[in-house]
Length: 90
Image 1 (cartoon, rainbow, N blue to C red):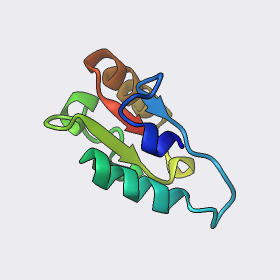
Image 2 (image 1 turned 90 degrees about the vertical axis):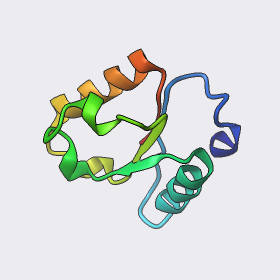
Image 3 (image 1 turned 45 degrees about the horizontal axis):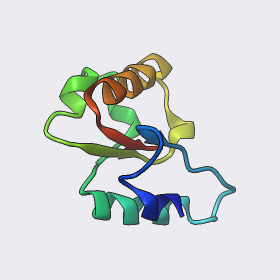
């Protein structure tokens, strides 16, 4: 339901959770196509500032959030997205 409700989400970010094999990546891919969102690799977090990672995009998707190594960079990305009105699917 929430994937289809975009862009009328109540927040700037949505977190998909579920067990392995439940379709999270599939839903994230469908949303990214629908939202014309960039897909960020967890390894890129912290290499570039959040504003550079999200430049030119109004929405972004991060798949594999459990693989994030730089939690401070993830927080910076969340804060930047909220401050600039960008949407994130995690």
